[in-house]
Image (cartoon, rainbow, N blue to C red; front, side):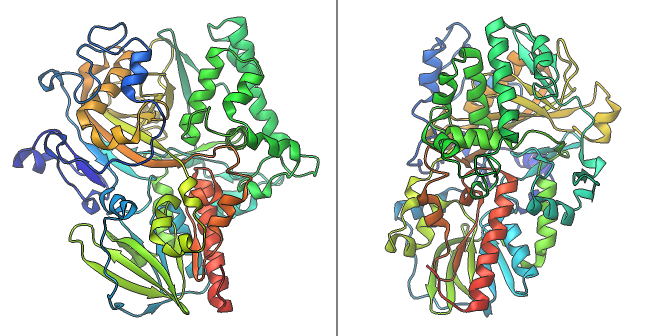
Length: 600
């Protein structure tokens, strides 16, 4: 990933900046004044810019009600001299991918392959690619290589370290497995210790936090406990809401539980992951013809519950309720109900580390990006580029698994377009910011003890995680311990991807710092650093027709000796679906190699 800062650091500052675990593998590029900008992405996260959103809220100019002093539509929100914290904008390496997309990357045609004919090459080192590499090796292919464009593997299952604790840079947790594939996987990874007599997987207790798990901020006061306990009505009784808001909220949350247990007329579960294993009941499939916003409005839910639906949609699936299908929303969120949250400090990075260990670290090559993948008879040729030197090289294998988002896969594999398989042009992705706020003291909240996740709706932030949850530090509970607060900020409806890659660190840091101060008054005096992690294509968005239509399945079936993985193969963003996609793609590749047949 690339690091952008708004000012040049002195040699002493650079030496003093402490790197977190694995940081020696990061590509660091310091940008002065945000001056070196990436090419603007063609697609937008939404139709609204931050400036437009804030203007619609009456916060568009200096001194507006609720707005920060000195607000403007771009750049700094406050003069640098008034900012008492430091930080950087840390983003994915977009440059080569954007040039590939725009057709401005000149790829040589006459390069001779280097090295031997490998059994398999995996492209993309996120959890899907790691799973694919592991399964290919388990399937009997000893010579497997995995290439990753960044300086680390795991994708958005990434962690860093500050104030004595690991912290997540994006993903937080997984849930207790509910299907045979995940149960076996979690047993192999040491997550599931045993299977109880009733078939329930029993999780390693060290991976389950002691709580409290969640708080919600209402009118300046924090209220403890989630809304997904055994008694939703009792949970809502504690909250200072109108009768209408209380009833709507109860209906929304109990509805998720009902959908989780519902079966179609064919006897199959209403929803499953992947969706192909769910019910084919036409009444259930019809949910993929409408948006979640339309579904919510049909139930007459009021503004507060509609806002809750909007938060769930952008937070969990990456898109606004007006663009996410009701089928996608209800399947993804209902299947997340029940069971423990499995987590450690650093989010899902520990799972990615275990996958990398199973895949074999000697098989992993970082800092190289694939820019062309093509069938050549009984082998696949892969053209790679070193983003730092722009040196090209070619490797070959008996098969390949492309575990990259489909919008870039379509540009890497020209045969897809030649075969009329251009569905990658239809894929949509949501962007995410994760601010990591280093604070001198763990904050105290008005009304409730601090929890793992503390929900507070701001301009960007939807809430914050406490980094050291489920650690010895957390259990000891020293109220004066330094900590890191991870500020969760999906950008759907709040900013465009163009703003994401063009605005400097200070722009996002000031917005997030203001959100945090509004949620926890006075915390600004303890804030020493605020890094911002930018994920431009964090989550694939399941728009109406995407999950149950043919376009997605058509794009993800093998092409010659090339198979396709990544979480977007299954149409929704999660660790569970990403690993399943890697497994399924690896099994397809193994079938191709063993059968020696060419599929398309």
